[in-house]
Each structure stands twice: as structure tokens, then as C-alpha cells.
Amino acid sequence: MDDFYREEILEHYTHPHNYGTLAESDISHEESNPLCGDQVRFDIKLDGDGQTVKDVRFSGVGCAISKASASMLTDLIQGMTLDEIRTLTKEDVLEELGIDLGPVRLKCALLPLKVVKVGAYGLEEWEGEDSAGEEDW
Image (cartoon, rainbow, N blue to C red; front, side, top):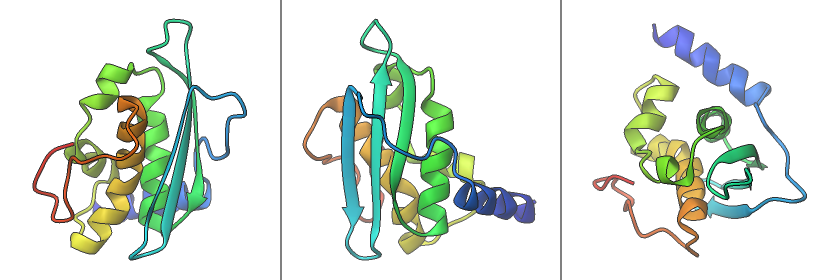
């Protein structure tokens, strides 16, 4: 089963979904992980209600896990409300990826979630999960 997930991760890495930027986004946020060099930006356009994701794009550079996680997350949050995005957890992201990750790769996988949640909360930075990953986002 891990081979299937590894193939899917490689597919999202080489052909990411929703890659690019939105010129007229309602939410834009970017973060980086200085330890590994991953950098991720999300642009979100909200529907007329100001709460529902109408369109989403991500851009940046990073490893296969980071880029695949961002790609999968764009698919996941399409059509979600900001309140639903705020309830997403690291378990949701890890379930999408479908493989076990060590502490270093966990940071790569969760960087896109951090970017999306900071944007959804409208914060300058997120104080949720620490580097060890004990708290839920």
C-alpha cells in the first residue's frame, strides 16, 4: 500500500494541482522552513459569502513531501469554509499523504497546513503546533 501512496506523492510533486498564484486573492500568506529550505505560499479567493473557498493556488519551492502536501491540500480545501479550514489537523494532512513520516519530514508535510491556517485565521504567524508536533492545529 505504501507504494501506491509514494506514487501519488511523486505525481503531486511532478504535476502539482492548483500550482500558481491568484492576482486577485482575498487571502495570501507565505511561510518558509529555514531548516530545509521549503517555502510555500497560498492564495485563496473567497466566494461572495466571504467564507467559502472559491479558488486556491499555491506556489513555492520545496521537497517532494512539501510540494505534494500543498497540492493535496489545495484539493482538500476547495469549497471549504474558513471555519472548516480552521478545524483541519495534522492528522488530516498525514491521512492525505498516506505514509509514515519522521520528525524532519513531518515539518515538510505540515508547512502547507500552517500557511493555510494562518491565512484562515488572518494572523501574522501561527502559534499552534510547536516543532515537536504535540499540539493540534
